[in-house]
Length: 247
Image (tube, rainbow, N blue to C red):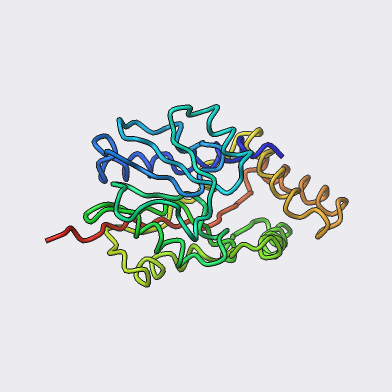
């Protein structure tokens, strides 16, 4: 599984939203920004800013790949639950498909708040709700149930997205804007995109679903796309919060 390709694919899904939010939060004029859970640098590679770019991930191999894509970034290997930064030093702190993967998303969000300056911005750009996944035709409905179970077995919370706004409230991060990304099923993906989606499914479901059954469902999936009968929607939420300025 090529995870950088997957992260780039996810970045494409949120490109319009990020362009909007980064403009609203003053990314172009920021002095210091942080991505928590940067993966291989797919999001950082698109940043347009003169700010000092900081990035944290707990996987050293992914940080090495990030360095190859964004050599100017200041990279740190660390835990989102205990960010190794001083308080109040970042203008913008953001994450992308991260909170569902941490054991305590409220603590992670609290840490993002802590390292952000008064008046600064905290962004969770994409958190899915796999429990509300929609699949059509009906024969493909089991895929969503299996994927949610596979994610739980990996330590993720597949339904976190729908609780994102409440997490911001609990963390004391005043919300400026929140909502759900536009459904991707509105735009039939190219064959290469479908292959990547299946590569992720096959990785997640290995050992959980027999390979023969996955192959059968993959054929049904492809045939449904060709007949323009396929619907696949995983509701994915975002939240933008801005801390109160000092008085």
